[in-house]
Amino acid sequence: MAEVGLRAGRLDDTIAAWEETADLMLELADVKGAVEIYLLLGRYAFRLSREKKGLQVLQRAENLVLPQVSKQDPDREFLSLYHDVLIWHGYVATLLLPSGEQTLEQAYEPLELSRQVAIELQDHNLLARSILQLANLFDMAGEFERAEMYCGMIDHIPCSPLNVTTRDEILGRVLLHQGRYKEAIVYLQKVLAVYTTDTVYGPHNRDRKWVALHVISQAYEGRGDLEGAVQAYESALDSIEQSRLELYEESRMGFVKKVVEIYERLITLYAQRNTEVYNPLRALFWLEKSKSRTFVEMMGL
Image 1 (cartoon, rainbow, N blue to C red):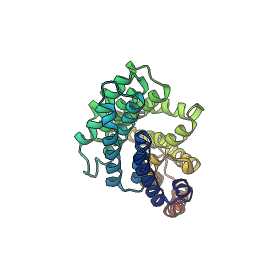
Image 2: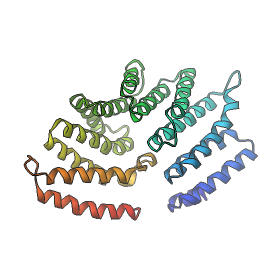
Image 3: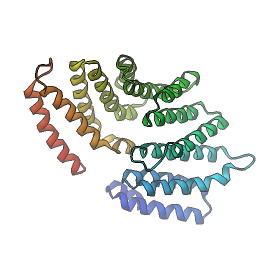
Image 4: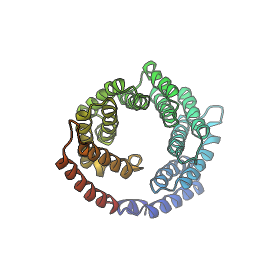
């Protein structure tokens, strides 16, 4: 039933089916399976903008796995699951910071715990994931020096190239928020070079490319390089169009809002008189395209 609902786009049915599946697994004493289902439930509840439901489900997963990892010699599989639950919990709480529904401390606690679990597992990539989420948290909270500090820690961890590139993307955003536009552009150019040429992490790269282009557009604009800005904004919209149907659930959160923001900035730049990028025809072109794009997104296509 869950798979049918997912393929049909009926995410309410999917959540209900997965919840029944998790309950059944608990009846069969399959704690590991139940935790994995609750993780999926948490992700899709948040995708449906049911943040409280998502956090409740993640808390249930944490309550199930905690006794397993509190044993004297905990199973590595449960420790790894615990890390996943904590990372996702901290990620959701981070995204809820702007609304005031979660505090900095509520987001920090699970992420710091995930860092400790990664150390216990002696897994460098899990450790890098925890540190990157902490960097993302403090960037979101406006504590840019702490975010930059966590980004710097990645240099001392022998982790995967994917994590290094993710660090560069987060650091580029942190530097943008600090008004250090030139430094931000350097890091984001490195990120885009990877996302454009690397084939190992293809789906992830397509998912993140438009985000990096959006950030570098703002950095160009901050430096006063309007030509670089409009080129990057247009590239971001092209990338969105190419990868829209393949976006991860996390990227769909706030997706429409970001797309509208990119359109607005691009149209505004082209419509500004007495600038090197003033082009009313291009402004009109993107205005008309934004109307059709917004309609398609509203229809959920």
